[in-house]
Length: 304
Image 1 (cartoon, rainbow, N blue to C red):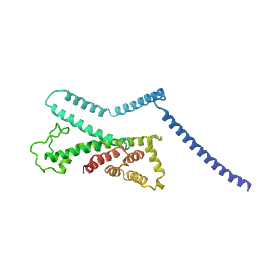
Image 2 (cartoon, helix red, strand yellow; image 1 turned 90 degrees about the horizontal axis):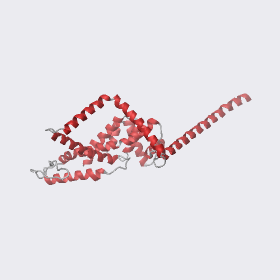
Image 3 (cartoon, helix red, strand yellow; image 1 turned 90 degrees about the vertical axis):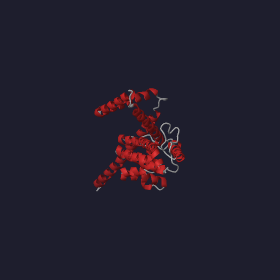
Image 4 (spheres, rainbow, N blue to C red; image 1 turned 120 degrees about the vertical axis):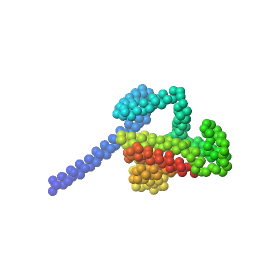
């Protein structure tokens, strides 16, 4: 009996000891992570310039090496792009009848790049971007609408449109429809929407890299997302439940869930990008749905 009692006590002591060891290991890992994070925060140029520059150069060298290997693996595509760029450069610098087409393409490219850049400024920064719709795109649509009703036509000459709107000859009063105005500003609006889709990529890449590396990113939005996942069962307030709804829709529905979130004015869409990156959603699934939703569906809603 004494032997049996002693043998029963030994597994209990061993189990208690294992739990203590596990708790000690978890605390040691947490302390190590906290120490690493403090070291990363202290690693700035004005405090430790030599060490910071050393790590910067090493990371730059590693990144360039990885990009070189990826480009070498796709050397056929790279060669084709170089040939096309060379042909365009030759056509751009050579005089001839084709220059009017080259100038037209150049003007269109710069015009589209301008609106794409404004769209990126609007959505980049996890909701802290510049409100370029109110500052640029909205006034542009309003000015085109006023000029169209004043001139009786949307056939504004280019140039000087859009810097200066000159009414064309032959405009008929009252012949303007809503769809003609939409067609006039569709290019600018779609390019702006495409820029907002590009601006949603940083949260996606940040969460994807953090999940792939297994490290804790120094980002408040990602930490909030992790805490939200841990407290999902006990969430009661409306904001947390709304965030969970976005996360569940994106995770379960996939492409069409991302499309639905991107197609409506949604201040929580940054969370959708973090969710897609965290759950390793393929890039083209996320970006394709975001591009269609923001550049096509959402922009046609914002027209009206």
